[in-house]
Length: 481
Image 1 (cartoon, rainbow, N blue to C red):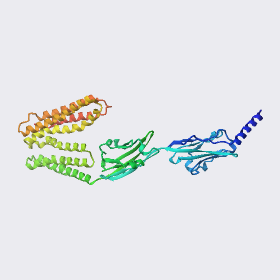
Image 2 (cartoon, helix red, strand yellow):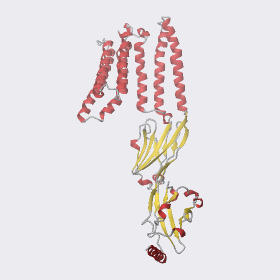
Image 3 (cartoon, rainbow, N blue to C red):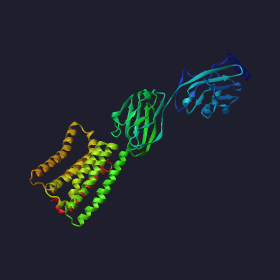
Image 4 (spheres, one colour):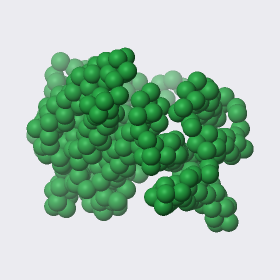
């Protein structure tokens, strides 16, 4: 019985050998993701005798040896170094006619045609397997830039992908600190209007021809000191994404910035130190002369006017219009505030004293209110319907309108020679009351929960009001009269 079975087996094997064998491969080209793994199919339908079997994997274009199996074992020492430990054979599957190769950690250079050749003593055959495309999205260009303020610089970013550059869904330039959007490229268009105001009209990509080559480098014009930091260039397309970083550091100072620093130093030395010393000496000696009054006025005016000019110049070189205008306005109104609390106010008589008394605090608070509450207004605005937006606008316009009317009333009354009926203490209390009303509205909107984003801001306003009330109590009586 056993002899009959062996005879049948050898007969079948003889028929296979006589008819030869055919090596099979995949039905079409393979598409592989960069860095992934791919199985290169190679098999025969009927197992071949192991004793005389030899399997050879090569690159068809360069005859580079990928893997070699002979005499029942692999020979990794014969492999090309670029495939060592990346091309894996399934030895336990060879007896079943499976000669497939597993290629791991796929690189761009792995694209091409592979040949799986199978040899026996009687016959041989081969099949070709093509890795047609390596799916990838690689963003490169990481570097460090040093520049002088006012210069134009280029932040490199190169996108290498199997996807045509014009079909890449999105390329995003961001500044890491603060997560500020610098520039957005989306669906073939550059959206300059989406840039943060800090970078508006100062950033651009290269031409469409360059972008089609994968060059998404960013031109940053008129570099400012605030531009120092880390930037990321991120590309997205379907399931693929990658990014690179560029660091802008060691920004040198421009001549304008040096001039600003010098002006600040002069304002501090002359306005605060020198004039401050003479002003204090005059006050200590009870000097009421015109010279002493001029020194005292200079002590108040010089630093604040200097700083107002400094902020305007800073806005031109490094800042933004809103910040520069706000800081300049605060320094201008601070002159009135300092005169209001100055111990030498008694030397100022007539109309100037009345205007200072009545307008110092309202103007100061008007500017501070715009700064402090604008972020909250913006936050609330997008969560309201049309009717509530109208109500909010009316509420917001009440204070600036009332402040403007009050200023006009003070100026016209004083200029016409009439006596102001509204005491300074009353106008101050009205200002503080409006502050409490705003605090009340914020509490209604956000509550006083520690988890709320504006809890700390609300507490700071309360502390500010508390300090203001204490200052009011300790000011000399003649200041408010």
